[in-house]
Length: 113
Length: 112
Image (tube, rainbow over the protein chains, first blue to last red):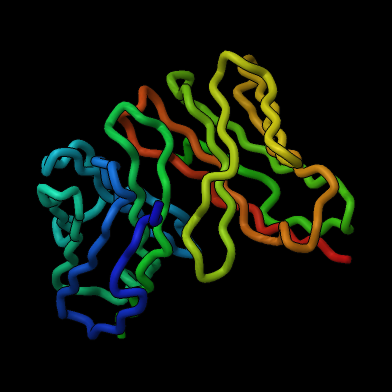
């Protein structure tokens, strides 16, 4: 069974631009969570989606948003990019909202210049 | 407020040694405690997880010890190998409906 896939793997953007990242969960998994990983803050939760609905949201500004499609694929968007948004953005999938086990994709490395 | 504190930040052991990584949590509502292994350029991979109703869980060379009263849990890697060199993260969540809260990570180096 294929794992979680994320595209693109690497991205370079300029401050002020916006970016969209994509995540395809493991087949049969219906929950998708997004995390930001930085050397200073570690892994921080962004948001979680199940059945196209946002179930949980972390402590990030409104510039960070996401959505989930009917096939469970998810996208996250960051508008008005700041230098501090440079990070590895990780997507994790799980069977459903009551399933603890989360499986991560390889991440998208975003660099903002 | 850091809900899961992980130590040490880095660890160097000889091949065959038993590195031990410790985590402490604050929220007694946490009921799921996984460990993740991350290699450079990769996403975290679920290694092993434990629930509070058991004190120890083994999977291959990896063992989690759990002390509910002390609100601590630890990862032991038996017969460590250079291929175990990676960053290890502990995490916690509650109820299956809440996000994982991660420790800051431990960079492990196993030298031959």
